[in-house]
Amino acid sequence: MALEKKATLLIKNIGQLITMEGLVPRIGKSMSDLRLIENGGVAVAGDEILAVGKSDLVEGQSTLAEGCLVIDAKGMVVTPGFIDPHTHPVFSMTREKEFEMRLQGKSYMEIAQAGGGIRASVRDLRSTPFDILKEKTKERLDRFLQYGVTTIEAKSGYGLSTESELKQLEIIRELNQTHPLDLVPTFLGAHEVPDEYRDQKEKYIDILINEMLPAVTKDNLAEFSDVFCEEGVYTVEESRRIQKEAAKLGLQLKFHADELKSTGGAELAASMDACSADHLVYISEEGIKAMARSGTAAVLLPGTTFSLGGKKYAPARSMIEAGVPVALSTDCNPGSSYSESLPMIISLAALEMKLTAAEAISTVTVNAAYAIDRQDIIGQLKPGYQSDITIWNMSDYRELPYHYGVNLAAKVIKKGKLVANN
Ligand code: NIG
Ligand code: FE
Image (cartoon, rainbow, N blue to C red; front, top):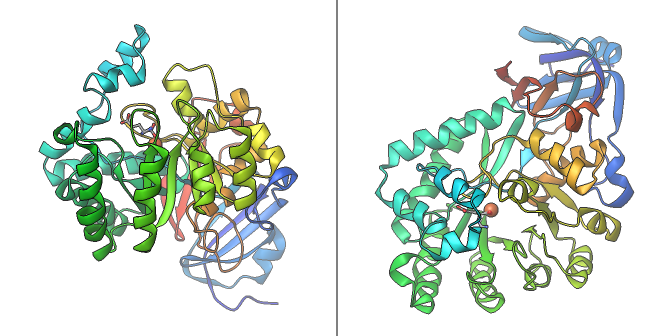
């Protein structure tokens, strides 16, 4: 039967077409189910997927619109455009000096307590003009796209004043409108305590609750609220208080939890029905059980352990066994993980967390979509879903973790348009 709409894009001769249709989120063994079609094809009408199936069949069903782009994938692998559910992309100054200090033995927290870390980024962001900041951010978005990523979550958190938090969220909004990449905005006013309130954390929390949150939500500048729940930053009680107010204003919840120590952050996230809890290197047994029960996504960030020179990675296998929906992300930020490469993160997850290639692909497609509440439009190649597609220069998807440190994204399609051609 002929398709209802004319195709504006047809991809044929796909060696392995990974559709990811089926269970959302993927938990336990279902993470290995890629719904892979050999010798597949995809037809697209504008920003929507029309059909997926065997190459001949899809081609036979399709009526090509005038100017339809036909891509012969020549046996390559095709996946849904990858999704990065945890990034901090809005910053100007980079922090390579801190990276070197860490190589010489200083810890991330020592550098932060001495006034470096997030607070150094805050001082810089406040004094950087809007347009420069926007341009620097745009360069990072370009890189995400080149590496096969078509949607990212993007956090504020380097302003820590009403004015500067809004500045970042406005940059995220403008770039979402003008850049091919989709950005899902998160308010992270509780990323640190700014210099001027160092000894008056309570006062800063009051400002965050009474001034910042209402200003952010009034203009619909964020969908999520996040806090850095960690020893030396925000306690479980403080995090709960902030997130309760955020939820009242209609924001969904995310947490930076149990990154450097076990503090009960995962349990808190589960008890508040958070969309995700992220990092989780030191998650407790109880935390794992609680997240499995609440269906809170675990966004794991092995690039952070790697770049901080740590030895301990989040216990991904225990989480998968317990039925927690696991996603992966770069955590792209100037301090603990400066990378826009999700494929590199997949290699780390394979080597250090023992994820298979199939499981890893689940984490950056359906499960990443679930972690940002976009599971109904992205993360799968399925009729009616957004036409975000990556063509990989490989004939077997298992090359993804194995062939590391190079860019294997051959073509990236966003909303039906070819946006990267490597
Ligand atoms: O996710 N953990 C807190 N926030 C970031 C680091 C931010 C920074 O160091 O600038 C993270 O790792
Ligand atoms: Fe982070």
